[in-house]
Length: 102
Image (cartoon, rainbow, N blue to C red):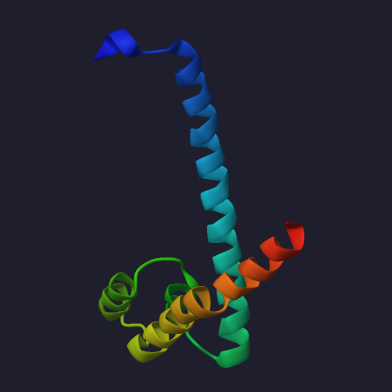
């Protein structure tokens, strides 16, 4: 197993590790900022706003909302909107962008 280990690949994976950490921190920071904004504008609790906006599965966010006593219907509604937006709006938008490029 170790005979195919390439030192250059290990260095590349260290770089990818840090990119992953930085990317995750940026996403979490954005979700926290938007949660604070949603908390002020829509008067949701921070837990409800965070779970509604956080990337993740609908079932996982719903169960987590149940455990932390957040507003489960609101969390599920935000997650469903996010999923429907990604499935219905993003593909045509990307198709039009790529059609302009080519």
